[in-house]
Length: 105
Ligand code: SF4
Image (cartoon, rainbow, N blue to C red; front, top):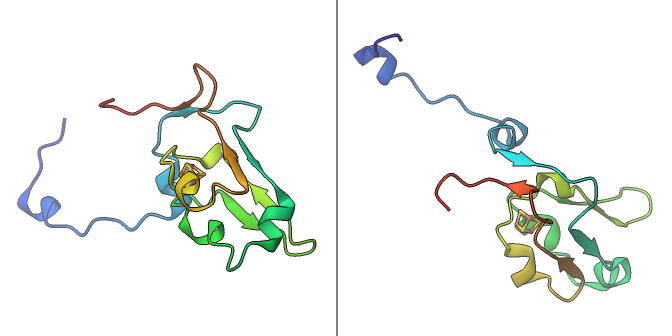
């Protein structure tokens, strides 16, 4: 094990991309999505906040047909989309044995 020097402890923290950060999250990804989006509800929603509030960028707008793409495998299970966009997002906990493994709970 290498010893930490004052110089190494003062080194700037590396800046990670979202993909790099998501790669640090321990999880088991199911084949079946635990998130469903009502596309008509999405299309008619003013401002479509779902595209901006998810910390893992699970929701994207398809550039051609305007559908909401759901990258459910990135979900961190924070629940924000259920607070903001409950009218057209149906979110369930991933089925047993799948999803994020949090270290302390
Ligand atoms: Fe994104 Fe959180 Fe909703 Fe998962 S629960 S899709 S991380 S907002």
